Amino acid sequence: MTTQAQTLHPTHTTADGKKLVTVIPGDGIGPEVVAATQRIIAATGAPLAWDEHPAGASVFKQGLPSGVPDETIQSILRTRVALKGPLETPVGYGEKSANVTLRKLFETYGNIRPVRELPGVPTPYSGRGIDLVVVRENVEDLYAGIEYMQTPGVAECLKLISRKGCEKIVRLAFEVARAEGRTKVHCATKSNIMKLTEGTMKHVFEEVAQEYPDIEAQHIIVDNCAHQLVKKPEQFQVIVTTNMNGDILSDLTSALIGGLGFAASSNIGRDVAIFEAVHGSAPKYAGKDTINPTAMILSGVQMLRYLGEFTAASLIENAILVTLASGIRTRDVQGDAGAVGTTAYTDAIISNLGKTAPNWQIRDYKPIQMPSVPTEIAFTKANERRVVGVDIFVESGEDAETLGPSLTALAAGTPLHLKLISNRGTRVYPPTGAITDCADHWRCRFLLNDEQHGDLDDATLIALLERVGKQHRWMHIEKLNEFDGAPGFTKDQGED
Image: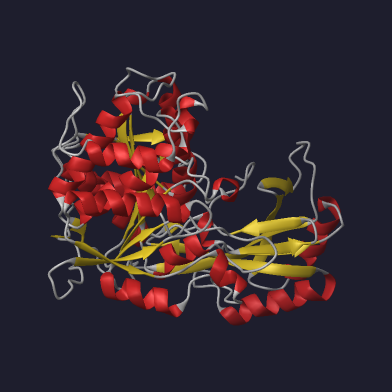
């Protein structure tokens, strides 16, 4: 499984030697926090130039369903780096979130969320020394958004976890740990329940960890991880996890240090990186000069490190610590009494460039070595494979005791037999004596008869579907595969 790491993708440089960055001001408070970040970066003297383009609500209103115009896409393809303000996903027009669209278009598969205690920001955890990073897989899992109404009252969402996706995010987590001088990585999954999807992440983590002997690797069940984050967050350094888990855990961790106003993030892929604050566009505060820009500024700090501008990044991070330690805070932290506005807070950070806060030290960051994982489509290959049966999902208002004999009779004379019927993951036929409140959505498992040693061929499967379809409404099938002798499907609760 060994792969080579690669340095970050080269960025576009202007004629005067500046690194060109696409900037998307965003919606609501976006233009204010982005402008604050640009002012502070400019004050460090970092050699950056900006290529500004729109996305979000204004684009939706022009009738573009994606919310991301081609000119913005072309700019990011050219610069390879974007600083993005929060984007609104309007209700009633537009389609998918423009934020998610941007992440998926450029395969920014890793969401990196640093979480660190800050001076002058009181929380129940002040003084505990919280300093961790959540590394979240960013493009697959339930967030692929593949959903179906299988019956009028039963919805399905496909949870897609690929081995390739797991390897990329796990390797990135270990490389983040090395780049930041960290010594421990936790992998948080729900593999005790979802043994194939979340289990893939666990297995890949355990394999990849062997290539990083300098870093302690621990697996943790995700609900215990959430529990431990509230109980003893200082025990964590890096947490790598799947998309849905990462969304929840990263918001939890931001609350430990003061809230979303301090939650920076980067979305990193092999070719493109997009840096953004985690919080939303908060339109009711737009233009009032009251919003906390720290999350956006710290996202800019991550961007500077990505671009190799480590000195400027450290100047800004230290200046933020000095500013907060001196008691200069926005209303989300301070309340209305004594709070400063966005502009005054930004001015204070600029005036503190070059200063350091006593007893508050930033890490000695090094460039992240991006993992180089093969891009081939058939990423994982099986030496042997066999289709041993099929699950047919049937919509029916009949009960299991009626449906079971009917399906058994329909399979008679074919190479298949009905093994069981389940309802929402619990076996209900043959009956177990359990009390199950059923919906009109039945998973009907047919297996090849014992004397059948080959593959279930498509002609046999289609013939069975035709038989079933004459008496029952079916909406979905899943072939039951074995790969290298191991079942590629799970059993229901109560299945032998």
